[in-house]
Length: 509
Image (tube, rainbow, N blue to C red; front, top):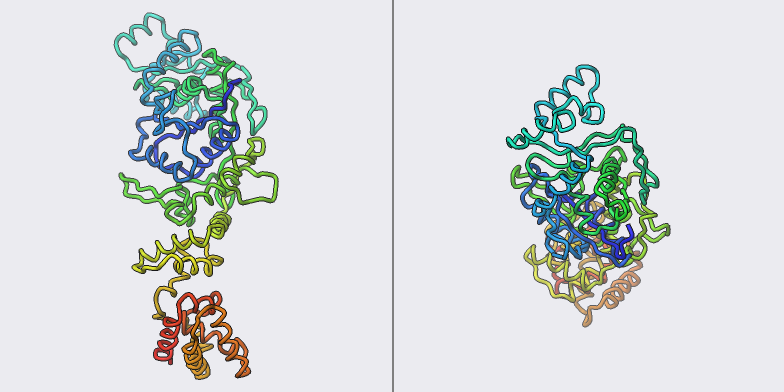
């Protein structure tokens, strides 16, 4: 297609929550459009009204917004090519189905569901389990190719339900060049006469998406590998409708695979294997089921997007952390792999850890403060930022930061059992008692002040850190390990540190 402007679309069906594979498809469309100075369009393909799930469309829009890949045009945004919900475009599809019939590229079929089931069963009984409605079988079915013109008209006039099927030529090679996969060739002998227009007056996906892509001037169709078998049919539809010169370029993306590489990552794999497969938490109002989401599991959207970008694409460099702007600059459909991409949950956690570390101490402090407030603790921002700076290296998520930092907000009620058993004894009690006296004399309580007085005590008594440090940490934090005790004491302040030393002397044996 020789459009002056790149226009791509993400066209999900509102049949449930948006799978992370769908988000990746949206992301690749977005990156390609932005890199080329084009438009990213959201179209809702709800032609199959029997599978429509209430709330799914809103979920799709909210998910894209959270990920930072909001459309330039489309459902929920508007634009010059609307409406962007296929059910609202219903009136425009029939004329194209009729055009195909009139041109001899499609036909009316009156076979009922019972007729089709009976034929399939007969074929199965005869040893042919994969019966198809095609150039061989269509003449024995009830359609406008096998019935007389008067019989066809009589059935239509009487209101008998019918569908419109594409009429495929026999033994025709359909070739097209896919940006990801190279040249693809399929013979029509291996295809069937798909339904294009249903008896309920709605088009099937095959007709609707071709018509919409043409009318919306889509230049590139970037979609999942599962649509590759349908691509030859779509190529023929462009040809039969006289739109071959304006046909978009195709790029079929690799599958997302389970962590073991054995099969496609499904909607139900996540909670079963212990990780989300949806961007946001999804509540199924009909069944009451709840599926976890990356947002609710504490992932940053930029980490989620960075991880998804690498599931099927590689920049060809050692760089792994990319902002959305950097992804836009580096992305190329030519560098998208053909092979399926295996999901790695540990790597996903690593991405989140990296993005947590990249955040400023002030921002982490605000996030930590919000967690503390949920637990009933108020803390000033400067102190929260200082805690975040000290604790962030150990955290993957903000919830880790909070859980690891909880001892800053309240004195220990329990003490690490292993440290208590191995390191707490009469000597440890004496050291803690002495430190209480030493710290009490300090007029300034900076990390340097605490460290200086602590080391002076060790030197005066000929002690190594291992003799005093563990008991000191246990008394102040209740933990057996952690970051610098001098930093911890300075953040807690003199009064709180002394209080905790005293408490430990009172509570511990």
